[in-house]
Amino acid sequence: MRITRISVYRLELPLKAPYSYSGGRLLVESLDSTFVRMDTDAGLVGWGEGCPWGDAYLPAHARGIRAGIERLAPALIGQDPRALAHINRLMDLRLPGHASAKSPLDMACWDIFGQSANMPLWMLLGGSVADGVHVNSSISTGTPSEMIARIEEARAFGYRTHSAKLGGGDPREDIERIEAIGAARLAGENITYDINRAWMPSVALQVLNSVTDTLSWVEQPCETLEQCAYVAGKVRQPVLLDECLHNFGDHLRAWKLDACAGLKIKPNRLGGLTRCLQARDFAVSIGWKIHVEDTGGSALADTTAIHLASATPRENRMDSWLCHYHLTLDPVSGQGARNVDGVATPPSVPGLGVVPDATMLGDPIQTHD
Ligand code: MG
Image (cartoon, helix red, strand yellow):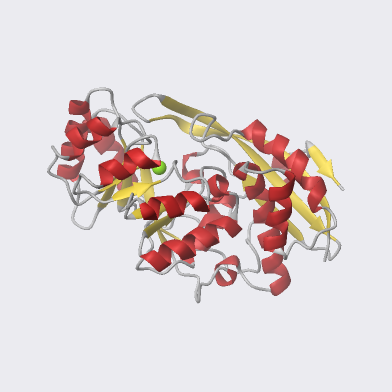
């Protein structure tokens, strides 16, 4: 089987409400998403999506994804999309780094691989059943009462795990937020405090060693892996890493430095499902907890992540975030993994199981054949 054509589409995905995080340093109001359609000489068609969470979240941005695909796609024409390791080596030779540009291409190859094998992605990725994945809400930064009100709204949709975004300028404000949210937690609920790298290491120690909530996870407290490792060794809360992990070498460094007890695995940050699978298997082998989700995007990107989360052992698995819940547009309406009373289940049709609405995508902005 050969790849005969790669078409690229752009779609603006406005958020239902502006989203403030990292202590208000960062604000997202709309997402710029890139969709990839991959055609083959066997008649099979694969889809992928690459959508950063704005331009300031990671060293990746939407226009960079499309510029990267312009360099990468010609190298993939004529290749067998099922040869995932080979496809990734070709992309690395053509354009080192630039994981976010590789992710939608790798995703489309996995979609075709699954269809050709007549297997859903969750099975190809190691799952035995389409196990439903618990999903978590994402609570943007505000006053303690605003954040608790957002958690209450999320409860109505079945969410029992909440990712509360912190990181204010004054450490006392974050102490107040943690104490208030921790006190409002219902029995059986989980909270993760996601700092999105906003704290200096000294602030992380001041806040985390002052609060009574030691049950909850703390995510990416500081900018770098080394700073997070320093904090992880001096606080009682388990630490999750996210934005500081860009490649497999970062995962090895995190392990050597005892920097975390868990991590987030995101296709668009690591370069696609092939790289995520490697990171997932390493994390399982050393006993880390794992969130699988993407950096952003429609239910297409969400569903890809849910396939991998579903195929991850329950002992290791943490709840996944669904970005499409924040969006006003749905280019894959009625398809894919959706929140049903706090649980998202991956489709069991062959491949990814999601095909975008062609009328919403419009004409391609790049075509390679
Ligand atoms: Mg995070």
